[in-house]
Structure formats: C-alpha cells, structure tokens
Image 1 (cartoon, rainbow, N blue to C red):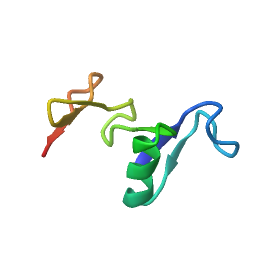
Image 2: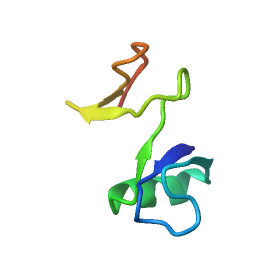
Image 3: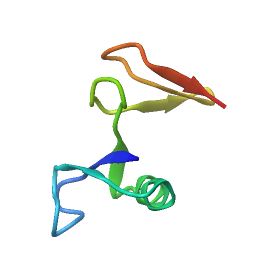
Image 4: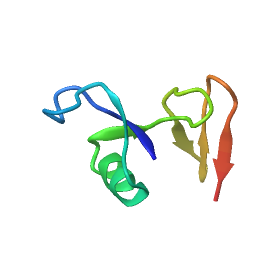
Length: 63
C-alpha cells in the first residue's frame, strides 16, 4: 500500500510517499498519520459512501 506520511507526524518520512504492508498502511491512515495514495496516478485518495476514489484520474474501488 502506498501512503503519504503527513508532515510533522513521522520524524522519518514527513510528506513523503512510502510503500508499507497493507495492514500497517490501514493503521497509519486510521490513526491520522498518513493518507492513502492512488495506485494509478499517485494523488491522495478520498473515502466516501463506502468507496475509495481519486478525483485526479477517476480511479474508484468500492467494498
């Protein structure tokens, strides 16, 4: 899973996109330490109505 570490939240990778195991990535996102990255274009993904979407390229995953 690709995530972007939020500035000031991680002393090692602030503001950088990093690849982490899926379980760790979900924990980082849930705890507000990172945001999930679109696998197609690298933009930040948005979670709404049970789906994960990318406003930049139109990528969507539901369920």
